[in-house]
Amino acid sequence: MTPWGPGRTLRPARTWKTRANNLMQRAPIGPGEAEAIILAQAKRMPVILDDADARAIARSLKVHHFGTVMVPYEAFIKRLIAYEELVKILTDVSRVLWVSPVVIAEIIRRAQGART
Image (cartoon, rainbow, N blue to C red; front, side, top):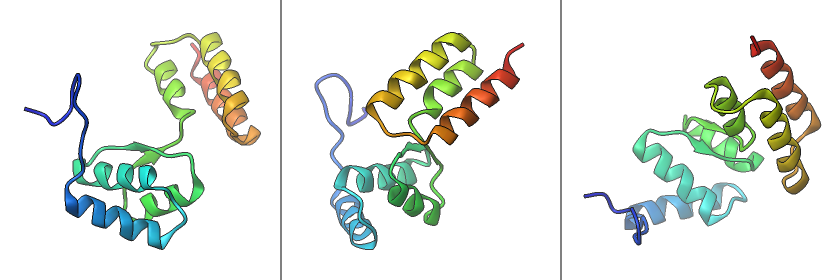
């Protein structure tokens, strides 16, 4: 049985909390980012990180990570959403989350190249 699901929360083990605290001492990241990195490392799964310091820590630990705007891009690549929907989502996200215009332009350029 998994420790998460409807009505359940994932509670990091005490060692995870200690490791998360160690990460927070290494860089100015919050507990949520630190615990997400530790969980991703333990489960060998990618983590979504938008904070530059958190991404640097993840890189140093060889934890695969990507930013929020890559989620809709991957959905587009997998043909789960149309190009127009991708552009709308990126526009909406950039209104509530600062994303470099260079990053948005690069994602749109890649998506245009993948359209066929």
